[in-house]
Image (cartoon, rainbow, N blue to C red):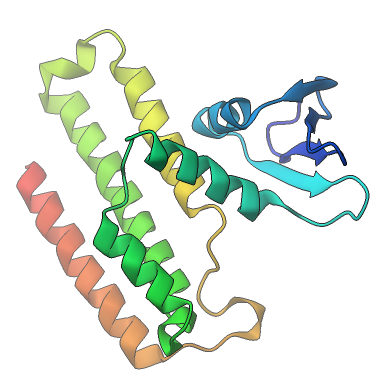
Length: 179
């Protein structure tokens, strides 16, 4: 029986085939994306070396969706991400992205709660499935990010504090707009 609290272990063979250790069958990138959309954490490891390949495959899934025209990330955001790898922003960007997605998740959650109370669309068939899918998406999008202050890292506390306060102000505005 699958334990939903543990990440689903996927092993990559030398042939580059991906093997689901819970169901003992081969899976595709699209299958892995479906697991993640359902809210399941995954871990992909190389069978021979034991290297964790999760980040590499998650990026590949995102790249495939983007190349099919399912664009979520604007070009200027992608450009800024590329720039962040070669600048001092690399130490601040992961924490900022994680905080942004947390705020977005909280805002989405509150908006859905408010919609459920005041919006007749909440009774519409499929509404809960859409809500669950969005929650799984945000969980997947933020799952691999490094939280500020972990692993002995020390970011610029003043900048991070300012960013957090700006995010809190935006959250407050979103909350007021939802009422």
